[in-house]
Amino acid sequence: MTQNEARGGRRDIPSVDRVMGSEPAREAAARFGRAALVNAVRAELSEARRRGVTIDAERAAAAAAARLAAVDLPRIRPVYNLTGTVLHTNLGRAIVADAAIEAAAAAMRSPVALEYDLAAGGRGDRDDILRDALRELTGAEDATVVNNNAAAVLIALNTLARGRDAIVSRGELIEIGGSFRMPEIMRRAGARLIEVGTTNRTHLKDYADAIGPKTGVVLKVHPSNYRIEGFAAEVSTHALAALTHEHGVPLLHDLGSGTLIDLTGFGLPVEPTVAQTVAAGADLVTFSGDKLLGGPQAGFLVGRADLVARVNKNPLKRALRLDKARLAALEATLKLYRDPDRLAERLPTLRLMTRPASEIAAMARRLAPAVQERVGTGFTVEATACRSEIGSGALPGESVPSAGLAIRPAGRRAASRRGGGAALAQLAAALRRLPVPVIGRIESGALVLDLRCLEDESGFAANLAALDLVASD
Image (cartoon, rainbow, N blue to C red; front, side):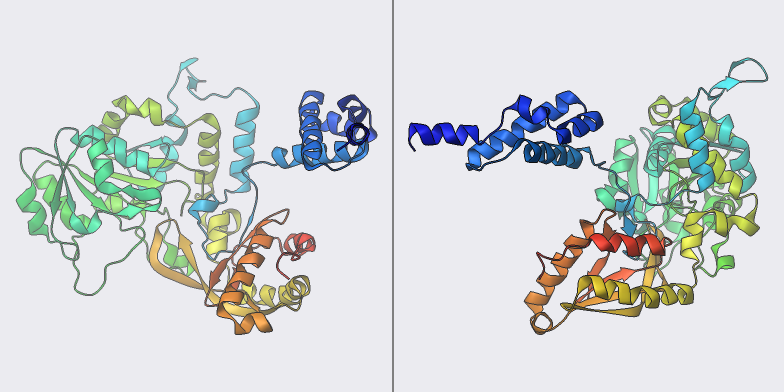
């Protein structure tokens, strides 16, 4: 390159000041701030020099603004959950009720009586916010709440069995998402794990033989995400409670998801309620807030007042406690359960679980032509019956009838298994790039969009307008 050519190349790259003086830059500075925009402009100009391309001030400013806009996108973004799993752990589990959202927002906007007794004019207890509602809904003597159910199990074991034996059936030593393993939690809690029975069969005598002077707690665990069938046996909560009470040992029952209502009344499979478990004799019951209960993330401990008091004195309690926003949202959620006749319409989780398959199928038929138009002739789209899971360890092994859209490769792609798989992967990626990402599932040679959790039909259709399949064609 000659000296003149080099000077000409430098003249093709505007100065930072010139870019900042352009109209696009003034608009971007008002949105993102001048300092951030200057850094983005410098990065764009540096990239242009490195690539040896020309760029004018307006284009450089627009590119810098686009760079900042991409960085400015929230990492926690709304998505369309069309996976067929209602309580999807990776997608945030339960959608909370409007009443809970409003309560949390109000708590965040101003000071609140979190640990302040308005009647006495002095320090109060944040557990009082939920205690009465939890007693009413579960029949327990007392209740407390921590960050999540794993924390509830951890603090309960640490309180009742630190340095002592914790007896549990081998068939209940579960592992759930994120490699959460019950044996490891028990060890971290300081309890000595005592396994009884076998993977598929545990009898009352197995527990009786294991109970001794060093026993701190007997633990019963809901299987959550699996089911043992066939030649299997487990001990009921009622029978186990009678045994543990005879020996003066507390029975801790981890329900995992946990429900406050009888789901069979909504056409769903049987799941033991918290109240039934308390009534069966469990001394302490733990369960989640953001699963079947339909609230924000939390872990509840309900049961005997003396055991709850011991948990509350554990130093871990302060480390695991909830903030004012989640407590406000939980209070609002629990209040909805006082009106069971309108619960399904007010609680999104229950509403989504109980949507009639016929209603979902009708929506699938309405949406199929619009989706076909957007994906083009490279794919076929048809309404299809499918089955949804509740998810997050709730109702293990059970599914409910649903409907959705099955998108399959067409033409030459359909004839090639490898090519068809690549085309579906590209389509799934394109759907995830939409302004509101669409998350489905690939199975049996199709991208399935299960519509059980889709309530904004018009918004979904409008969102498809941004679908870009250039890379897929």
